[in-house]
Image (cartoon, rainbow, N blue to C red; front, top):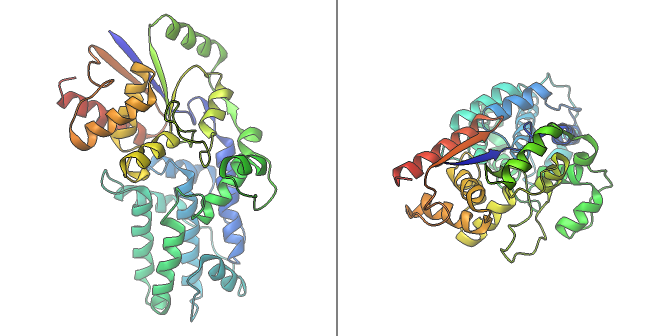
Length: 354
């Protein structure tokens, strides 16, 4: 019997206070730019986003800013709205308003209800917020331009160069020096790395030692299974430019450097090879969970990613997913979306008599 252990990182191995503060400060930055003051989500509201399937702060930051933007427009509808986000925010800031606290929790619930294997988080968020925009007749004159602005906020949340909220968020989590190294651009502003400043370790020292000992004698096989950005998989031959080492930073903090990572960078590499959109591969898609299972079993991330995609898209069973034999899969997750992705992965394997 082979035992595979898949560990999520945030709120399982490390306490991601750096992400929480960066999300709050990013939302506050953009609400301040639109002239309504700082309106960040609370820690409880951030947990609501995660509970409803919005596990990436890139998505939840953009959704929060878009939601406040609609609240601002509804409170005092303008006669015109620039179709560029920065210009739209500046125009609104010329007539500052005080808004009541946004209802981020219900927003998370509504977006989560639309997330499915065929609908990504950004697509669900855009659908919910566009429906909100259509509800009020007072926004009819600016709807075409508003549609462009919402697309700029939510259409490319996984692209540092195209998403303004993701770009700002990454400056905060990585710091200005790492922005240069990771993305090859001059930073927009000076910042310390929130992940280094605020994250803390959750995994007890004795448990980490036991994991390493059990792994070294073949009693269990471990992979880290996370939505955090990470470097491209070892052996892929891909330059690290544009790949943010956030999962590796957390792995080092948890002192689990011996174990492989299947994170957002891994899926970004797979997306580039397959032509698939990365947000169709990350959890709740079973592709990431299948890749984590294959990686834990073999230690080979590249072959596991390819096998995961082949099984999900083509129904073809390839090593290392083929030949798993008598295997158990144990998932350590704090969010239902990750558990559900693992269940879907196991069901797919079961359909192939694995």
